[in-house]
Image 1 (spheres, chains in turn orange, cyan):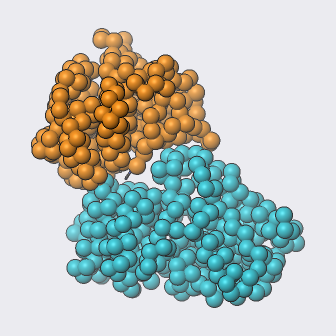
Image 2 (tube, each protein chain N blue to C red; image 1 turned 45 degrees about the vertical axis):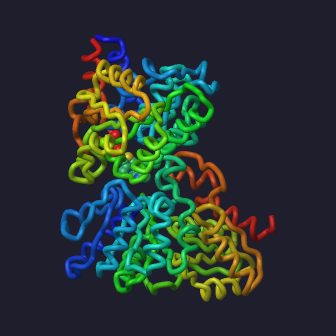
Image 3 (cartoon, helix red, strand yellow; image 1 turned 180 degrees about the vertical axis):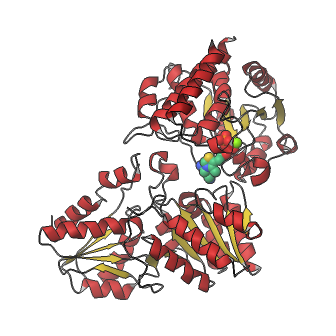
Length: 272
Length: 311
Ligand SMILES: Cc1ncc(C[n+]2csc(CCOP(=O)(O)OP(=O)(O)O)c2C)c(N)n1
Ligand SMILES: [Mg+2]
């Protein structure tokens, strides 16, 4: 088993524990985005606890901020803080590990949680990099339900107007949101055409839970010049836990003890 | 312990009314579950519009529907509905006086550990500042039902905020309700506690705690923040030594500000405002947050005593 894939599954186990303990969090979207976060933080981006104060670091924005749970686990694994503390105090009284990324947590670039802000923030950061002639890149991860927010299209326009080739968006295309499929709630079909018509370089990743395919996509984004890139990652919501996969009920479901044990067992089977 | 939430009371009232009135339309933004409006959506699919995660569109589409003759109820988390869509509420609902009732669900700190993005502690200030917008924070399920029935009868803009969890009953089936008239929960001549929404049961409990110490409190349920029931505030103010306002909101521009404004102009006396802080609010369940900031029964009782003794 490849190293990144292994890591993504180990981190899935952590996030499952965190959510089981806290009875909070957004497990479905955590599991769909875990491979994306793992590839970005452990392969693609130049960001670490060592360089986090330096302005050369790559910038990361979790626009689908409800998946803070997954981000905290990845940042903990990266060494930004004690991962166990995050697992034990997530969503607890007075904990800084609240349900959306906030900058009290070391490693979080900027606050999020209200959908439809991340891409505009990313445009701002990418513009600043251009102004200052800095080489850092900005990565934004969005949900497909989130793509209904009109602000995203304003940001898409601005990013291409200013030729922000230092900006790379990823859409976690898991096909689900809270009330059902994105198709029935507000279709985000043909996102590829939408981004392309706004002047973006579009990279489709057939299996957005496949680390190898993701790495290849981000390499392609890095060498694309003159326009922003978007990685459209076709993922499975709840990926790795059979009874959660593609089920709308697991957007923010709470596991019973039996369900928790089953989930851990399934992840361990993949790891062994 | 009552289990029926105010949002469920809203759903039930709308379901009942929609059986007769085909002009009632409910609009949601991937929020039907959190609004408890799933049953409405299932029973009246032709009177339900899903906008996806697009709150600005939600509000202005609602205004368009209303301008074309529909009676619209737009339900979305209070945090996004009130400030994300503020321009839309200002121009297309309040200014154009469209028949839209904005239903802000999971108001205040209902979302507990989801943090600042999900708290709506500016909504009263924001909405009350819009000319033509009425602002209501009903306390329990009985009052919520009466309020919704009243709003179904008129065609003017309104903003209604309800909490996520069920609140203890303040009233019962025989509740007396008049639109825009505050409700006296209990009477006492030492201190008046003026509050609204899900804090009313806490204030009622605080009055009991105070009574044990020989302090007599009036509790006024000001579910109608705008138009503020001035008569009720002034009449209460004349019977007590001081006033404590209590609200699940920022300290600025909410119930406290409005009561203080009225009292300073018409009947100057001591008014203390108890609210959430002007800063980052801690995470935790809403009950934990209330007790941390002294908005639970004991905290309210303590503040009332301090107000009385000039501490
Ligand atoms: C502006 C805004 N509106 C509504 C919400 C509430 N909300 C949180 S997650 C979610 C669904 C998100 O679906 P999607 O973007 O597809 O995320 P994923 O499937 O990856 O979890 C909604 C409506 C929010 N956080 N922000
Ligand atoms: Mg999705």
